[in-house]
Length: 221
Image 1 (cartoon, one colour):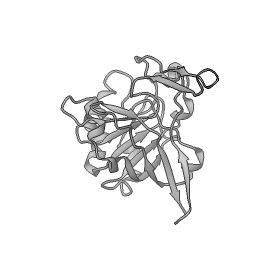
Image 2 (image 1 turned 45 degrees about the vertical axis):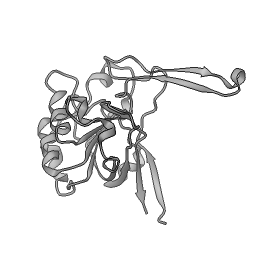
Image 3 (image 1 turned 30 degrees about the horizontal axis):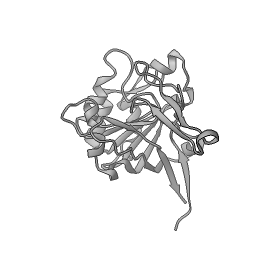
Image 4 (image 1 turned 135 degrees about the vertical axis):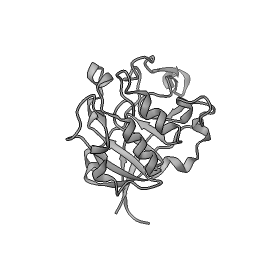
């Protein structure tokens, strides 16, 4: 078997961690404690679109696939890493100008990972909660033409926060069964590579619009 490196691409989930501004913060409470009950068990209460998570088509479309209806193999595979940290500004849409240099590498069935540096800003600031770079409608349409599996980003969403920026990319991607993987964290060591093998398998939650995931990248030597 070949040797490989594994890189964790997930933001940590914890009690009252950052979450979408209109959602309740996650709550993690003990239901049993080892010192008293002989074992420890916790209760987790949070929106499924919290932390590092996937969006399924049902997130925006009543007749779209729910997260459990999407093929498991779609959530893993060859991924292209696009480093835009030095080219993108807060609140700016990622467009064809940013993607054209990578056009030949983006092929049918691949996954596109967009690094903007936003994952390193995770905090309870207004900037983190509202100003992340997002996928524009034209970029989403480009991904559809390329027939990719999914798009991952380190912002809170593939769409933007401000009026008119949130829905277009979601609607284009999800209507074509291209999932969105949001709020990633990119280790600096991974950015030395152009491609990786990605796994972002969701929980098998029946009939829902998304799922938390432990996303990770693998580099094979």
